[in-house]
Length: 292
Image (cartoon, rainbow, N blue to C red; front, side, top):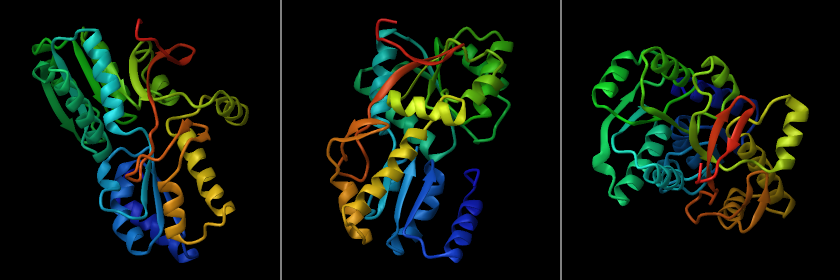
C-alpha cells in the first residue's frame, strides 16, 4: 500500500470481498491508523507489525502493535547520546505517525536527562522528500554535532549522500530504518560506520533460517512478522476461536520465546520488546557495546 491511505483501504476492501477476514496484519503505523476504525467495528484482530504510533492501540480492543515501544527506543538512544556528550542535536523526521512517535520518544528521553535544550534543529519532512540540501545547510549553520534521522528508505539514503557531498561534519545517527540492506546499497557507502538504535537482533536460529531461504539478512520487522503469525497460530491451537478470546490471549502473553527473543505483553496491547544499539558495517549490521 506504500503507506498511502487510499491504497490501504483499497487493498483491505479487495481482500474483504474475497472472504470474511478474522485478522489483518499491516506493516507500519499509517496503514494501521487508517484501518483500525473499521477493524474495531468488525471485531477483527489487527496487528501493526513494525508500527510505533501508540494511537493505534489507545482506546482499542482488538488492535495490537508488535514492535519496540518508542519510549524504549528513545531511552536507549538518549542514554548513548548522553554518554557521548553531544552538545548540539538536530532531528530530521518523516511526517509519518510512526516516525513522529519515535522522534517523540527520543525527545522525551532527552528531556528526562536534562538535554532537551541541546536540540538546535527539529524539522519534519514529507515521507517521499528527496532534497535535503536546505536542511543540511541549516544544520551546518546551527553547528550541530549530531543529527538523528527518523526517515524512511529512499529519503534516508538521499539524506546521507547529500550530507557526504556537502561535507557535513555532524555525526549522523539512525532510528530503525538504517537496518535495510537495499538502503545501505543505495547510499553508496555513506551509511557505513553509522550507528543507530533498533529492535534487538532476532534469534540466531531465525537469522540462520532466513538467510538460508532468502539469501540476505532479515529486514526490519521480519522477526516481528514471524512471531505475530506464530502467536495467532498458538492462540488457535490453544482453542481460542473468537476475536475476544484471541485478544485476551495476546493481551496476557507471558514469557513468550520467539524469533524476537523472550517477552511478554505490555498490558496496553503492545509487547515489551528490547532495543539495541547497532552499527552499519561492510559485513552487515552489528550490535555494539556501550563502550564503543
